[in-house]
Length: 570
Image 1: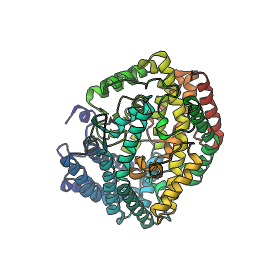
Image 2 (image 1 turned 180 degrees about the horizontal axis):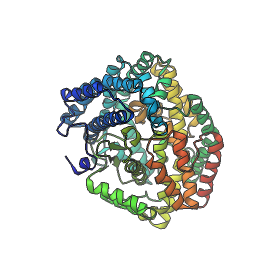
Image 3 (image 1 turned 45 degrees about the vertical axis):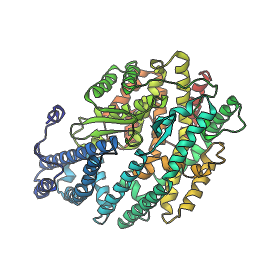
Image 4 (image 1 turned 90 degrees about the horizontal axis):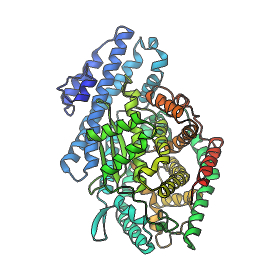
């Protein structure tokens, strides 16, 4: 047992329990089912023990997932992860359902503190409404298909400049001033992605079929309503998402297109091509903030130290504990994430740094998630140590915005201003992509029997609404399949609009930070410590911001970003 486990000792799960052995786990589930709490206090103890078992199993899955994504080439590590999701999780799910039913049937449930247990209670009700025995094998199959997608991505490398490189490592070549070299790098990546296009289309078609069957099994007309209940989206609807799409189209897309037009004019080009979007439009050399992962970690710690010494110390502590895996390498799964180890209540950060400015922003982002995990670690229930994604992303995106005034920890004064401009322009440009991906998902699952050709046609139709004027001539097939690089579509269906909702919250916090940083950070910490123990609007309120992603909220925030850009040199 490590030091962290002793910090939060177990009171129900034996220390020697093998969490990968079903026989041991089944006894624990049976013991919980057989207990008959005879008072409110006994019910609360029972809930705490259920939470402890969930935390232990959550951490077991997390450790196996982390190991698998850090090394997709190891068959032993892959087998360990697949064994857990194929043989342990499916057997657990019916027991979790029975435990949820037992809680809902308790005569002492109505006597619990309603303010504290409100969110827990409605979440359990939602899980009971969703659960169907026949969906367990479908969920297992979906998890395996998602893992196949990640394995395909992790194996993608290209030969370039005399060396084998991962796709994240290729991104730095798109910032070089030699246009022919940028094109060669972009084409190498595009062609490599196309090699697996058909395989990814097949995986995705199968995932849509599985998810649609799950929804129907649970009595839902489509996977959209199923997913909204699955994600506990009690505070907004698909109609609100559609309104968000239209607001972004009217208030953000014109700004994004204006930024691209400025780029085209500055570069003296007749048309922008896909390889012209990351290079500095003035022909300045690429920003080069660091070479090694330890330099990235140290620099981000210094940035955070400017405005919060305690948070900076937390990141340094994570580095010392080996809780950061930062650098891109062959065999590593794509993307980046922060994963909380539920029992020891510690965060782990995974990313694919390749020496780019966006890596600095990514580590600030994931550090925000880690700070959230640390702030809420004393919440008694595992359910409350996670917050709704719409607010979890406020924690991470706010950290990006707080840090942008201190990019000079990596750059000269001029390059720091340039990096800040890149970041703010990136916010304007990512919101249309978020709207496009979300609108795509709503159509996909409203039309689950669509063909690959219909899927492609609708993606291109959405691009006319949300895309910019970039010339893809000769590379139309790459444009058609550009959605395949979005991991969320494969692994976390309907998890993406949260970034848009959260970005609006983060921009509000940033506005407060610019006026009174101490107060903004105080509200930030206060809200983070609540974890998921309050409804979504209440979490926003605790941070001193509004839960609103209508055009009424978007338009003034875009104006503030535009005003800030005007203060920066081009």
